[in-house]
Image 1: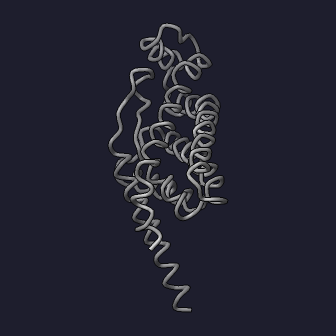
Image 2 (image 1 turned 45 degrees about the vertical axis):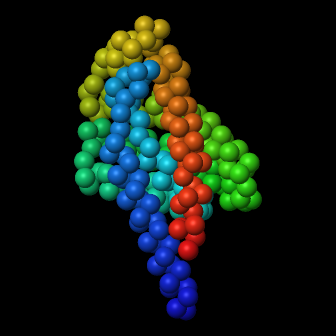
Image 3 (image 1 turned 180 degrees about the vertical axis):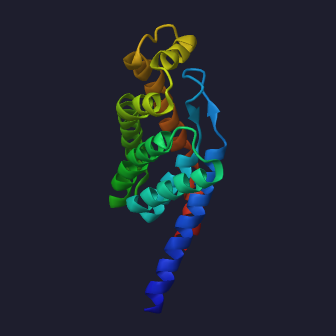
Length: 199
């Protein structure tokens, strides 16, 4: 009984520490020149992915959720919770399949396969979230003009003419870059961090 309680407390503690790390990393965000400025890159998914690899896919979902909640408490929302929901869905779409593949057989090869699949999932879900959820919901809730959003994209790349071209030309490459960079950082850091998490 004591062993189970201790294991549960250790699990909760690790989730809490990784959630705090993800929250801190989320505060340091920056735009990329290929997308409008309201798309900002952060490396919080590195902590989520490390947690998913070491503690399992469901742990990654918990870390992602707690990260979003803490960030809401610190910064509030300027997207009527739409951005936070999209961030949660996209984060889970990245970390969950990656961990699912890696945790079945923990080898370096499967880690890279998992992160590759996770990146493709992030790109796919990110495109769907932006097209069907994030941008239309923000236009509806904030009263922001769709033309203004498309215009911000066109200012970056004149080839952006409508929502579809914004997704293909700006959102897809943005999430691809995010997935690749977060995967590379995770690959560099995981072996250094995992012994601590497995204690």
